[in-house]
Amino acid sequence: MVRIVITGATGQLGSELQMLLRNVGEKECFFLDRKQLPLDQIHLIQDILAMYQPDLIIHAGAYTAVDKAESEPEMANLVNHVASEEIAQYCRIHGAKLIAISTDYVFDGTSAVPLAEDAPTAPINVYGQTKLAGEQAIQKWCPEAIIIRTSWVYSAYGNNFVKTMCRLMAQRDEINVIDDQVGSPTYAKDLAVAILKIADAADWKSGIYHYSNEGKISWYDFAVAIRDFRSFDCQVKPIPSTAYPTAAQRPKYSLLDKTKIKSTFDVAVPNWKLSLTNMLAAYLSAEDE
Ligand SMILES: NC(=O)c1ccc[n+]([C@@H]2O[C@H](COP(=O)([O-])OP(=O)(O)OC[C@H]3O[C@@H](n4cnc5c(N)ncnc54)[C@H](OP(=O)(O)O)[C@@H]3O)[C@@H](O)[C@H]2O)c1
Image 1 (spheres, protein in one colour):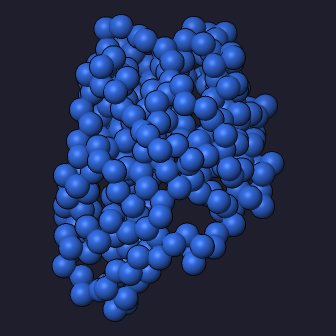
Image 2 (image 1 turned 90 degrees about the vertical axis):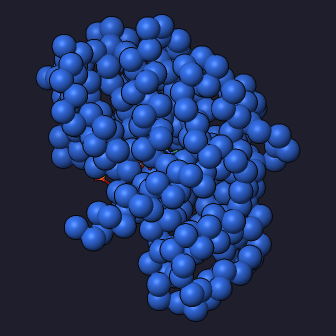
């Protein structure tokens, strides 16, 4: 039976993986949360992983507080870079496979065309720098690893833009949302389905891959779609990023080119609007229970 360790088990992606892997007979899965695998306790990581003897590690855990990372660069680096390096070393030593998740924030946002995997990286915030350092360490120690960069992740689990919008729109008559950052959101469930298809693929093809939902939108477009789906009586006003200063700078253009992951693994990449509909339906039915 294949033994799989999933890091970041309580996060958005970790939670979606848990739901999909429930009752899957032929896999023995170990979902490790912060207590079971503290990614900032580097000296413990190898020994903890050895207890589970995984054939595959899906590394979904990360320091994802993008603004806070600006004032906690050491912690962000420890979790996103050094812990990823340690996990890659474990995989190298023990011959385990590794699928690690990275981010569109490794790019600076100046591209005018969808970003392919070999587009030049140049992160403009601490989170992006630490995730890129993590990617590079993984590739150095475990060249057989698969790294999947994704963007604007949301889910019925955890905190994210969609859930924040639903909460604010229920309370307010008007809301301002940035319209000069474009990309594509990613429903974590779609990403989880893609990861499991890749894990099950007959051919393991190492390297970096891009995955998000299909389509190109701004945060403003995303907010309007959420408002319309939920029929909130709330006006959504477009504003420039300059009117909403944050500790971390964000790339203006984050659209990932998904050609490689589709042609290599034949994974589904649903349109963002369909996925938003699916997520909101799952979220609302969970709220009703
Ligand atoms: N969220 C996005 O918009 C986005 C965009 C692009 C790429 N990504 C990448 O996608 C992957 C999955 O992200 P996500 O959205 O699922 O993130 P998430 O919901 O923030 O989950 C991150 C997970 O990492 C865990 N974690 C953080 N610090 C830890 C530590 N010191 N020790 C152990 N566990 C720790 C968290 O534990 P707690 O629950 O206990 O905090 C949580 O389970 C990550 O690699 C992320 O960098 C995310």
